[in-house]
Image (cartoon, rainbow, N blue to C red; front, side):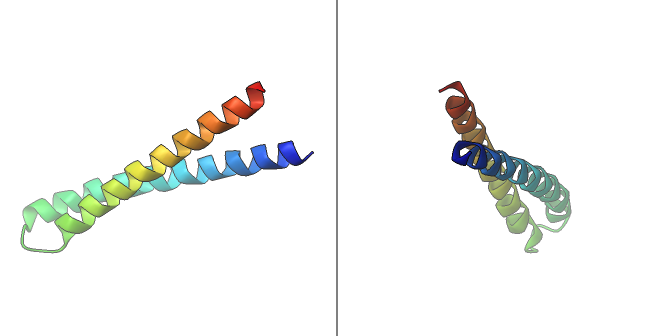
Length: 74
């Protein structure tokens, strides 16, 4: 039972991380287009931060997925 609970938490964490990653990357690209039109504004730096955050979230989701697959295998 505790192993099932840990796998459920890992699965939920991976799903949330994927969703946050996709939203951050998409929003980063949209704001990046706005930032390229106005290079002196804060939008370009914000967009780069959102893209970096989205990539980190996707990386965390990958780690959670690999960990869950290894635990499922054992």
